[in-house]
Image 1: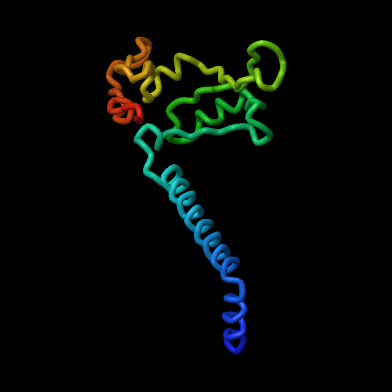
Image 2 (image 1 turned 90 degrees about the horizontal axis):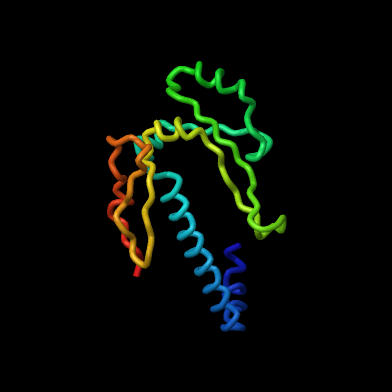
Length: 156
C-alpha cells in the first residue's frame, strides 16, 4: 500500500474539485452520523425516571395490533416483583372514511389501573403560550407535576 501512496496522492490532485467535494461529503456524513448517534444515546441511554425504571411493557410477538391472551395477565402477576398488570389494546380508528389518511391509532386502557399508576395524569393546555398544568381530578393527588412539564416554555 505505501509503495502506491505517491501515485494515489498525485491522482487525487488531478481533479481538485472532485477531491475537495469527496472530502467534504465524507466530513458531512461523519458529522451527521455523530449527531444522530448523540440523539440516539440521549434518548435510549439516559437514566430513566423512577416511575419508568419500574415499568415493563410486553406485547404479542406477532404484532402490536394482536392482543396478548387475557390468561397471560395471571401468569405475569405471579412473577416476583410485579405489583400490577394493566392491559392496553391497540385499535385503529377512522375519522371520515376508510382512506389511509383518515386512520389514526388509539389505545384502549383500564382507566382505574392507569390512574392508580405512579405516572402524572393531566393536560398541559396550549394556546400560543403554554398555560399552567392542570392535573386530572381522577389521578392521585400526591404525585407532583413532572419537572419537564412544570418548566415547559414554548420555543421562540
